[in-house]
Image 1 (tube, rainbow over the protein chains, first blue to last red):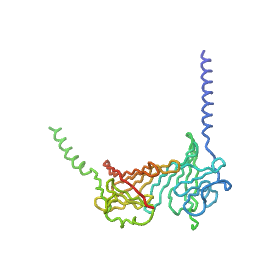
Image 2 (tube, each protein chain N blue to C red):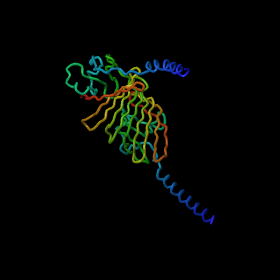
Image 3 (cartoon, rainbow over the protein chains, first blue to last red):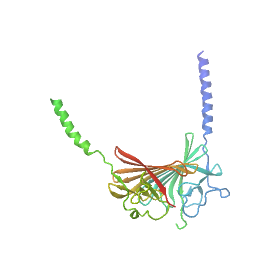
Image 4 (tube, chains in turn yellow, cyan):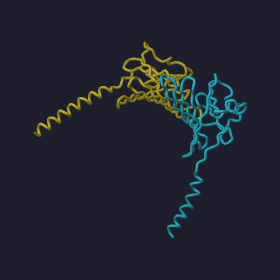
Length: 153
Length: 146
């Protein structure tokens, strides 16, 4: 009898384990790659009024771009350039000249993408930023750099 | 008897303190010198009036700012005051702004200005003043030029 109960419990545990593993597999976060030049993307990485992000300082491996108000944001997710849906932006000002800690929250299907630009101002160059992807309790954070926003820099 | 004395001492100690620490909110008036705010020129400025003062020929603006919330002005305690922008929060739906919340400071007073975009035409604006536990809010009508 005891053996039967133990067997049933073990089977139940195994079943639950499989279920949980499947749920975990369903929350796979998309992979972030550099924006492809042969696919649609934001209005451009050159000039002013945009937020291009690179993986490395002073490099051209752009993986995110948007307008300076956070709109028209693009990322390469799972090898495809996708336009993100802006949900919310928060600017916390640190001085009277408009320098701010900026946070932009986007959605792409079930994935929530949060872009944080500390020390955001009109003339930022190679300032550290972070991009966090979240989905069903999983999250992954990428460290990034804000590339020059203006040609003059 | 001892209890009475203790109670009297407690009241004597606590009452003036509690009255003195009662935060006061500034009186809100209409901006007196609109050209001096620098918002008489340029595009995309926000002009806000109190309901019922739209047809005033003289002073009529209760709040003025640039479109992004910067260079904001209110008349507080009879003086045109430049508010310090602390925080801006914007909610979007289908790439369109649905709500904007701007937090300002003027001395110890926090001024929270919210714009709720009902549709393309209609925006409901609320101005809230806070200082400690004291708060007062009122509706305003906003418009933008250009």
